[in-house]
Amino acid sequence: MKTISSFFILVFLLFGQMYSETPDSRFLHTKGFDIVDGKGEKILLRGVGLGNWLLPEGYMWKFGQEGDRPRKIEKLVSDLIGEQEAQKFWKRFRENYITEQDIKRIADLGFNSVRPALNARLFLTEAENAEYIEENFVLIDNLIEWCRKYNIYVILDMHGAPGGQTGANIDDSPKDEPELFMDQRNQERLIDLWVKIAERYKDEPIVAAYDLLNEPLPERTGAAEKYGHLAEPLYKRITQAIRKVDKNHMITLEGINWANDWSIFGKPFDDNVFYQFHYYCWNRPDNLNDISYFLKHRERLNAPVWVGETGEKGNTIYWATTQYFEKNNIGWSFWPWKKMDTRNTPYSINKPNNWDKISAYSKGEQKPDAKLALNVLNQLIENIKLENCVYFPDVVNSIMRRLPVKIQAENYGHDGFGKSFFVADTSNKAMTYRVTEAVPIELIDFKEGQYWSEQCIVLGKGEWTKYSVKNDNPEQFSVLLRLKKNSEKATFTISVNNYSQSLEIRENGWQEIKLQDLKFNKPDNVITFHVNEGIIALDWIDIFQPE
Image (cartoon, rainbow, N blue to C red; front, side, top):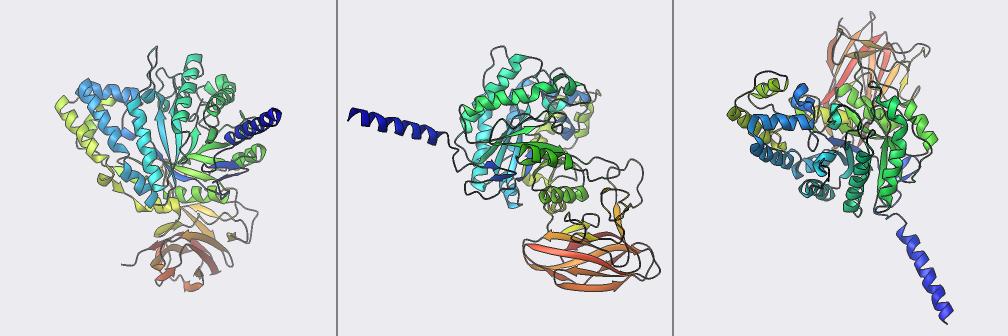
């Protein structure tokens, strides 16, 4: 009898251990190329990056070299208003830059995730005997609570590791060296910090993943060549330490050289990881950069791929990139949610009066009066509150590819020849923008050095392009086309779902032609532009609320 009892106890213990090592079904996890929930349903993470909140970046403050990273910005503020007022300022800044109102708005706009950029120094001191700073962990606690309330997933991003992982301003590097990889003590501190984070949030399903290191080891400084071989071994050590306390959360790994060199990755060392690259189209003129490199690595790694940062350009690129990613089963996070005095983010922070005097001081110019500086910084605290920011619906609608929106003609779909476009000659490729494809794309009045460019497509008789656009509510919209004829006679048909309208272009030069108001369906709509006769250049299709 004693032997039988011992047997059942042993079986119970073994099954208990097996159960405890099985990932909790409440958490997102990886499955082949997909991220799925506990029911096995695919989740495509479409989010925004919460930059400049817990790791201030100088370019978002319009600052020069003396304010290009968090520690320098903090020193500048202290120099201007004194240490005591500076401490008050930073407490208020962190409490107001991202609030519940921001998270609710992010959810209302259709995003499903956020990626807060963390600075290790905010949570772990740099002293010889480093100590954790509990009050700053509460900021993440609050964020997670709000995200749970509005069903927004959180990807915790180690943007600034102890010592710095890039040797540049973006990680708050103290000496412009990637000291994380130069000093074993920094690596141990990073591992300890990730274990601390994992212990704190191990039971929180709204946390989707841990982003172990942001953009490590750039190539241009020589850091990638010198230390690149150390990146994956460090990732393994961090992951092994996390798994001792947290077996549930996904882990996302970035390549070296701003996340985009994946040659460092061998066979996946954990069964719940996905890989991340960052995608910025800063070419002048605009170009839709190829992602086949990452798709090939996805095949090799048999794991999901995600774009942790994209943005910092204009609406044309925003539409193109999210469409491109999603066609290839890749989620994304737009960078950033808001910044000062801009036109290319969902929200813009109004620049305080006399801010240029603060900015000038960061560039080595005259120091402003302390009273003036305090007033300006107090005004900044008010301006960063979401209700005082400026919203740009055109930016968000371009990211989400939904109405009302202006569709640039070059942003036809990615389903290929015969599905998203038809041209008679497929041997020639576009001159610009989508240079691997056969639809003719030409620049419009581009001047050297322009930040973004205007492009148009040029189609002949029988050729067509197709566009997909989302709509939240079935209703009437006005439609305006900008085009011109490149032949004596030119006619076209534009179709929206089952409705078609044919028109002739009678005048020369660029012109805007308005269609009859049209009803668009919920949620999906297909627009086809077809040339019936002649040659036509199409710039854009603007779909907007009737007056």
